[in-house]
Amino acid sequence: AAQAGAGSFQADLLVASNRGPVSFAVGDDGLLIPRRGGGGLVSGLAQVVQDAPEDGGELLWVCTALSEADRRAARSAPGGRIDQAGYDTGGASVRMLDLDRVLFDRAYNAVANRTLWFVLHLLHSPSTEPSFGASFRQDWAAYEDYNAAFAEALAEQAAPGACVLVQDYHLTLVPALLRAIRPDVRIAHFSHTPWSPPQYFRMLPDSVAAAILRGMLGADRLGFLAPAWAEAFRECCAEILGATVEGDAISAGGRTVRTSLYPLGVDAAELRDRATRPDVQERVAELRELAGGCRLVVRVDRTELSKNIVRGLDAYRELLRAHPEWHGRVMHLVCAYPSRHDLPEYREYTAAVQRIAAEIEAEFGTESWLPVHLEISDDFPRSLAAMSLADVLVVNPIRDGMNLVAKEGMVVSTENAVLILSREAGACSQMSADALVVNPFDVTATAEAMHTALTMDPAQRCARTGRLAAIAAQLPPRAWFRAQLDEIAG
Ligand code: G6P
Image 1 (cartoon, rainbow, N blue to C red):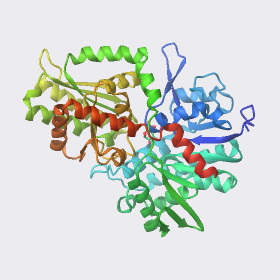
Image 2: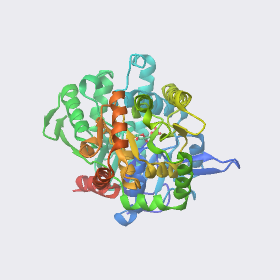
Image 3: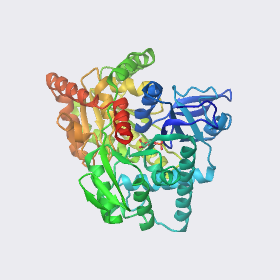
Image 4: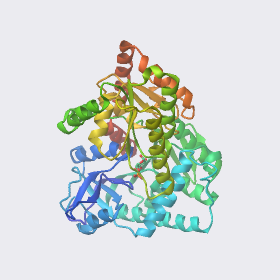
């Protein structure tokens, strides 16, 4: 059971992820303001953690300080326990690791985001293809140290026999490192991303590819969001490590580890309740006014290359070119949450999104009609309002672990939104029957899907949104979390 005091505190249940449930910003008055982190991982986990204490044992979330403001918060907290320093963490016990800035930059920006994320999402183009030279070796050494820092913090804070749930591609080495220090704890690793097939994964230096797979195989259980990702992981183990794969089981280095599927859904009741609160309703009214009676084609994403925002806008432009009947009657509302702007690829991508939105505006906009409205902000209530008002929700990623926007959007829809869904999103393995499924690279087909969506008859829309909302509500965060714990604790 949990003991008081930061140094001696030991938890029965630990979550480890790079990004924690809150991050800090500095207000005009110089004080720290806590805010909710973005992305699927935090959306999924934040709620679980709030009620975990009633769920058996105390839960501790170990994450990193991501910015100077986070570092200030972590330094002012006893043992990095920011909840104990009086900050609102949404009810969670949170320990933020205050790591060396250069080390963090190399591990998070250079290795996790610029290298692994690109490899897992098949994002490389000839201009971004990596060269793994001496500087990458230094980056990789930092990634090893960063993973070791997590393993040590977890080893220190885990009660005997504790369960540790390690999240995502930032922490692939933690399972094996932690097992070596604390063989008594039970370890699960969960990938919120896709996994890439061996032909692509082998782009990484051999030693790095093998270290990642071996690191993850140190867990008792490996969780994935969709069947294709688990299969690709098993294929990588077979081909790169020479592991034996039988069904879900991977045997290598004298241990056998299984992959499991946990297709994360959303808490429909909680989200619907959230969407009725005044802050969201205020924004609903604002957006209605902005739309001025136009039908709304909506998307909500991080400014992220894999989300394919530029091709989505290009498809909308083709819709307007091919179907002038929509002029003056439709608006594309793009809510983009700023993301990873430390990387030049992301800054350039955001600029490209802004450019094409401006081009569409210049080509079609009139005094009385705003064809496209792009908002780059991290206003979650605004995104909820936009999703609830959507006639069409565009989710067209090049590749995506799950994509929770597809699920959130169906659950909060008040207009029976038609879902346009990329076949490369994990969500498509569950939602293909009632979505309009598109090849994310095919701009013309995506434009036609927009037209089909806008002309679909109301009864059909209603039936489809209803069925999709029911699927979205399957395996909500609490059940998703519980299922993983049951498997490793048993
Ligand atoms: C994805 C990843 C998460 C990550 C999120 C936001 O959903 O799977 O691990 O937290 O993107 O990205 P960021 O780099 O801002 O944490």
